[in-house]
Image (cartoon, rainbow, N blue to C red; front, top):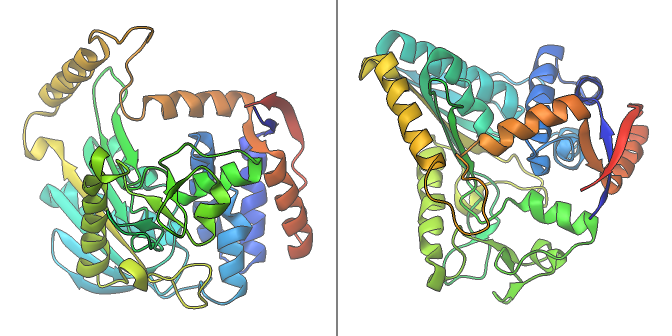
Length: 364
C-alpha cells in the first residue's frame, strides 16, 4: 500500500490550465489539454495524467520541441477522409479537433477517418473514441509512440505502446469502451511503480539483456516493455503484431514517424507522433434502437455468465473506469506523495506554484 493525497478535480484542472498558459499555450488549447489529462487521472490511468505535466509536456515545450502555437495544416481531404499536419503542437488540442472533424464527416456520410502527422503525445486514447458516444456513433482512436516495446524474440525497444481505443454505444447498459496498450502496460505504469518504490510483476518488462525483470529501474534504463501477451509461449507475438498494425496506420499511412524514428524525451528532436481516428454512424448500418437493444443483450449475457470460483463479478471493458471516475469525482483524485513533491518542485521552478489544497488522504 502507498500513501496518497486526495485533490479536488477542479483544483488540479485549474492548476494545469495555468501551467500550460504560463508555458505559452493559448488558453483554449490549455483547457483542452488539461481536460484530457484530468480525464486520465479520473479514470485511474494515472500514468497519462498530471504526472506528465512537467516530465513530458513542460520539458519539451521548454526545449522548443513542442510548438505552443502550431499551424495545423490540411494535407488532403475527401467527404469521408482527412489528413492533417499538427505542426509539432500539443497532441491533445489537434487530436480533439481531428475527432470532431471525424464525427462531422460521419454525420454527413456515415463514416469518417482522420489521420494526423507531426504531433505529440495526446494522452489517453479512450478520450477521443468516447467523443463518438453522444452522437450514437462507434469511435476509434489509435496513436503510435516513442519506442519502448521489444518485438517478440527481441531485446531492444523498437515499437511504442501504441494504444487502441474503441467506444461503442449501448442502451441501458454502459457503453463498451476498450482502451488498451499493445504492450502489457504503458511505460508510465512502470514509472509509477518506480516512484512508489515497488517491484513490477514478472512479465511486464525486460532488462537490457532481454531477461524478464521485476525491477522497474531495469526496464526504464536500457530495458524494454513486453508486448501484450509477454513471451512467445504466452503468444506475445499477437501484441507485437497489433503494435505494428498501429504503427502502419498512425505512422506509415499518416506520413508520421514510425518505430524507432518516433522522437522521445531522450532525443532533442520533434516527436512526429501519428494518430488515426475513425467514427461510424450506427444508423448507416442498421436501426439505432435495434443496435442498442442487441448491445444491451450482448453485454448482459457476458456479465451474467457463470463466474469463476471466488469471483463476484464479470466486467465489461470500460466499466471499472466509469465507476472509478464517478468515485474520484466525488472523493478526490489520489496522487502519490512523490508525484505531489515533483509537482511542487517543478511548479516553483516554473513560476506556477502547486497550491491545490488537499481534500483527504488514503492508502492505495
